[in-house]
Each structure stands twice: as C-alpha cells, then as structure tokens.
Image (cartoon, one colour):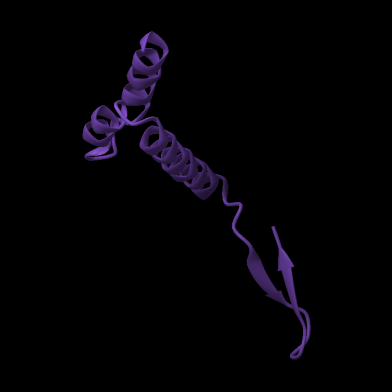
Length: 72
C-alpha cells in the first residue's frame, strides 16, 4: 500500500493541470486494474503533450501533383 501511496503522490504532483485526475486516482487506488489503466492513459496524455511543442508532427510535402512525401 505504501508503494501505491508514493505513486499517487508522484502522479498528483505531475497532474496539476488535468481536472478530475486526482479524484479518479483516489478511487483507483482501491482497484489495481483501474489504477493501471488510468496510469496508462495519463502516460499517453503526457507523451502527446510532449510532442506538441517540439513540432514532431508529420507534414505533407508535395513533390509532384501525384506524389506526396511525409516528413518529420
């Protein structure tokens, strides 16, 4: 239980901007599977937020009328 509480405290610090996430985590602490699912969702949200400022989106570049090249 102590390990789960420390994980909860760490995630709580990281998620100041996400509304309702802390409330969901409190409920999930009693159920390990939902806790894992919420952690996965939070990780995916964080990774997608990290991609936005770096500009790592695919951009279409037209080479010719019939050809489209994707670049990073």
